[in-house]
Amino acid sequence: MQSLSPRARALGAAGLCLVIAAAAGLAVDSRLDRHWILRGLTALLAVCCAALLATDQTRRLRQIVTGVGLGMFGLIIPVSQTTWSKPPEIDFALQVATDAKNAAQKKAQSAVSVADVQAAAEARGGAVGTLPTDKNPQVRGADAYPLVIRAKRDQGRPWACLSFTHGLDAKIRPC
Image (cartoon, rainbow, N blue to C red):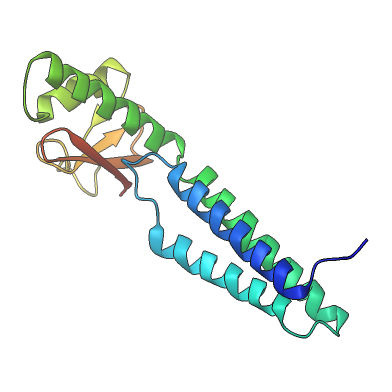
């Protein structure tokens, strides 16, 4: 049986890395920041490692380094970025955003109000705004976008920032 040429292996590895990077980026909820710059850089590094496959492969060490680079930049980093993109506080903020949007649509509003978000967060057991502390007694993020969403009413951190653009389009990010 004839094996594939180095150029065919390089082209196949580069194509597979690009497919994995695109699929991992699209697997993240559209309301979240998908880290496209970081994803693009890891895809570029994976393609560079695949290009090394097309060059002279006389040394075994170069083949090992190329394989490890392809595994890291083409598979492990894109998949781990996708897995780590939704910690519990972000997941809670996504649920609150969905509930607030549904409440606004039920009331036939063209935009989600701060009161809709507060009601949705409280219904799920969370709160809006930072906790007042001795160091900072003023509550922030409770009356204007971006709102600070806390998954537990009595816990100060971790939290997520939630804002609505164009009326009903939620944007969620860590803050």
